[in-house]
Every structure is written in C-alpha cells, then in structure tokens.
Image 1 (cartoon, rainbow, N blue to C red):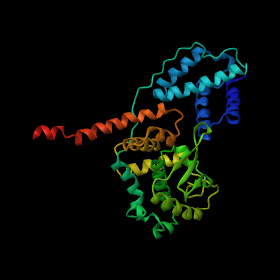
Image 2: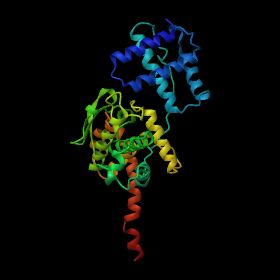
Image 3: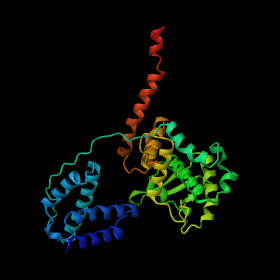
Length: 322
C-alpha cells in the first residue's frame, strides 16, 4: 500500500473512532501531507524506516526552519499513525521502534498581557463603534443600528476579545460555540473541549451578557447560514484564522510592539485569576486542563507578579529609611 493511501485510511479512522475536533483532524492532515511530500509521494508504506524518519526531522529543522515545538508535534503525529499501522498489521514493526529522537523544547513561560494591554485591545473596537465604555453595550442605538459589514466585523472582533479573556477558552472552542450552547440569562456557556470533554464557563460581568444580547440582535441581519454564535459579515461561521486576523489588525492599530494571539488571552486569563487569588483547581476547571500539572505553569507567572507587588508594597525600605 502506498503511503498516501495509508494516511487517508488513518485520517478516516481518526474521524470515525477518536474524539478529535475538526481543527485537530485538519492539523493531522496537513502534518501528514507534509511527510508524504517529503517522500516524493511515491513511497510504499513498508519502505518507511528509521532513516526516513530521521531525514524528515532534519528536513523540518533545516529546510522548513521549524521550531522544536512544531517538529515535535509532527513527529508525535507520525508516531501515533505508525503505531496504528502496526496494530492493524499493515507493517511488521513501526519505524519508531527503538528510534532515539531527542527533540527538546526550550522551557518558556506563557506570555500574558497586562491590564493596560487588555484595556487597549478592548478600547479600540469600542471606540470605533462610537462607544465610550462597556456600560454602553446594553440596548445601545449605535450597536443595534449596525448594518454595514465593517461595523459588524468590529462588533464581532470586540465580542471575540471579551469572550477569550473572560472565559479563557481556546480559539477553536470560541468559534465552535453554538446558540444552543449558551444560556445568556444565567451567564453560562457550554464548551466542547479537547478530547470531546465538556465543561462550562461563566460570563463574569453583566456588560458581557449585554454585549452578547446586542450581538444576537444584529447578527440576524447578516443572514447566518448556521447556528454558530460568531459569524462573518457574509453570514458564514467565523474561522479561527479570522479571529487571529482580527487580533492582528487591532494590535497593529494600537501599536503593540508584539504579536498578539488568541492563546495569549487564554494565558492572560489564567495569570490574572491566579494573581487575584483564585484557587488553582478552579482555574484548571475553567481552562479545561485534564491535569493540574498543565495549569501549574501559570503559577510561575503569577509568582513574578507577586515579586513585583512585594517590591512595590513591602515596608522594609520605608522602615529602614526612618
């Protein structure tokens, strides 16, 4: 069996038997297609050996200039696939058997936005919509009279930013929210997260509830094709890429000297909640982490915040000066 045909069967298996999101399945397909291209699209499955895997890793580093995390993701995908091929007895043994590959990811703390930066992200679309504050989200004529595509895109980008930071959800979870997932009155959104695990997130203030209510009224004018909450000005479901583009556009407008991503808002949610004293177990549940170990990385960030606060407020210096 040729490699490209075997990969197609593996993707079908993942689709039908594993609880993977469409976003994850698409990422698998892209990663595995890259491996097929590396092998010139002609390789037979049984001819894939350790040297091919090593060559692919070298290709990703040297030719594609990918970071360690990207290389590790692609190799993990390949390893799972060849493990399945072995289970199905399409190959005698996976090329990963006793294969030593050391792909070390540099330790780095999550990048979080400070309060001023988050305020700037929200303030730009708010000002462009003619609003002076979040208090004007409720039954505001400027919002309810939106008919132009440009203004609706601004409103959508504002809601994206507010929801990402308020709830800490992933961008794929954001774009997957449907109208049936929400109880706006109770301020609860049901999220279908990684591994098809369901959890609830909560709207922390009334202004965000009002923004959603106003958005739902305006949304009808753009003739949505589906029941997804967030749509484009053409009525189609909003993609994760569009959310990233919205953030990129706004961060350029407010002249940030760094690239802002949806995941940075997720990091920011965890960091600010921990800094405010919320129990890490609640943060774990909010973010949908299966293991608390994943959440614990944010404690390092909040520790740096604690150090800053101690330097600013500790009375030692004042005591000694007196």
